[in-house]
Length: 547
Image 1 (cartoon, rainbow, N blue to C red):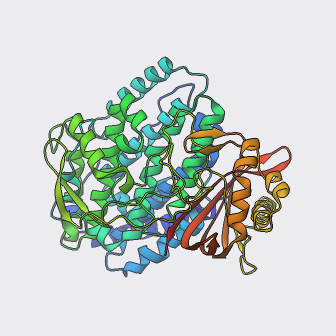
Image 2 (cartoon, rainbow, N blue to C red):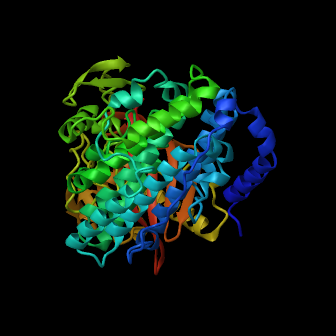
Image 3 (cartoon, rainbow, N blue to C red):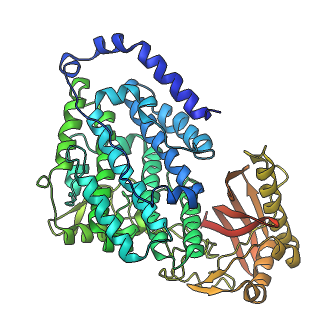
């Protein structure tokens, strides 16, 4: 059966093809005269191909959804330049976050079927993106192949990068490009200022794409790698809970989000930062009305050539690392492993544009500025276990006696709650499991609460805590907090991807804990795994901020 997204895409492609002649006559003469020799190329043959899809299908499918999101964005902006802002910020954004990401396609999509008119406008740029995305996928395969040791992985990465660079007509430069190329051109910033939610979603995509390398490298065994990938996946969904406030405020940089990967494979990390930077540039060119329609292709081609060459807007690797650090990981969605349960508080205002000197040091702001540190809820939330050799997260507030460990505190869902995407037996089972767990906490039933948990470890300020120890040290405080809380939730969403499921909801918490009043808004992401005994909770992320 054809995926519903693909059915719509194929319909769009057929409709576009029947109108090709008419469309070409409407194109400016300079554009219609362009002749492209761009052609695609497939995977480098290797035993590790498809390993990531085989072992981490729940994460792999999200990349298919990301491809759809990028394609529909460019197609919409090119075909409908005068469409209302809500067409992207609301209609398309909701389609992506409530449909495509919730039920992502099982296989990679042919983007030309989704963006037929944009693919005609800039086929060279499209193939550059496709070629770099293919490198992404093959590197995931290398790191996901448990049969390879690190020497073999290093050799395969070198082979893949050489294969990638064998197509200079499509390959991004492995020299770092300064932010001047991305955000100080005449057309720059148009997209992020006009479409802050959609821009945040794209940056969330990019955080996930570079971030997944880190748990694959940090995990010492398959179980730890799976735990890290699950945690990063849940963190991505957590970024969508309060858009655009909960999304990255700066473009995620690989050296900051995935420092282990960038240290071992700097050439690949730089290529991916250049890739993501060009995504922003194309969006700005298409979104900015000051670039005439008959010059959009010219500007995209100029930008593409600059991102391919090794001379335009180049900075040193040391400057690139310093620039990435000065941009602030807290402004990029946070690190991809070892993160705390609460989304990091950005240190800049939304939409801020930093400026840097030739050494990468920040010199000021071209737009926006530094933000005062927002007050976070003193009750620190909960996150999925990070890999054991990942760096520990910051300690939570000391005045919360049960903060810092990574199992949840919450009260039962309200009667008004309903479950989305819950028609399947799996969705209903996960929804029932979550309700059972939250109800048990709210009623003080520790036996039932523990019964819902799978084979998990709880991280207490960076130290792994066995479930038996959690039962003695923290569960009583969790129950006390839950019983003193009143929680109002929007309808819960349950997403099932094979043997892993994600339950997400936003909520408002009120009440008192001891003498301290509670009043916060936040999000809850519960990760469940299918076991021989049915679905069990593997991890919970709970983030909150004071009203």
